[in-house]
Length: 257
Image 1 (cartoon, one colour):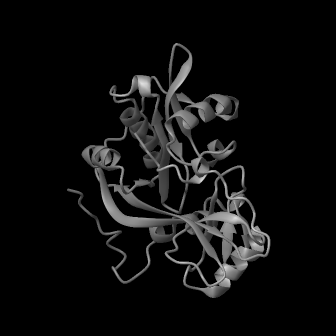
Image 2 (cartoon, rainbow, N blue to C red; image 1 turned 30 degrees about the vertical axis):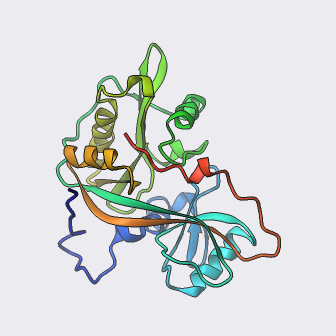
């Protein structure tokens, strides 16, 4: 059974926590250099990360700002919101979980190599095969990504994505099906976490609520369930609906590990 953890001794349960709106905290903090922003709405560049965020999902003006930012009749992924205003369409809804590091043994992986822009074709091939969640041509710019190769071929990877102040999300955790069961994902998670800890920050991650295998794995190595999350794919108001993105880009169930 999953356990849960309070966000921080410095935050009461009645106060919003940074991780409750992690994308907004990242885009107005360490990732501000990536932010495309209008008022109380912000997003990553479309070739970096599909997420948009609102300063306060309960604020109608923030939704107006988001509509102006992304344009009419446009499909976009919104984090931190549970419902949409009148005139907006919910295209897809995802249920996830957020886990935080409370006892992970973080350590380098000697066999891991740093991945960069030159590795993007291989990375995208592995992502397409394993479907750990959204990964775009410039996602690797968000933080440190490590991979493990076998006979020159990339077979496993993990890295850093959303970066609120004091926290860094571990994401894109995946292993080629032919090489699972060897603990590669765990070694890479520990390696990515080691770099995060060196900066004085705390690792966290997300996975789909139905992915009980990944949840059990993460809990077994030192992560604790913090909260359940909602991810919405929405269409902004407009007369001429834009095509809906293929489910593979957003609807992948963050099938980490």
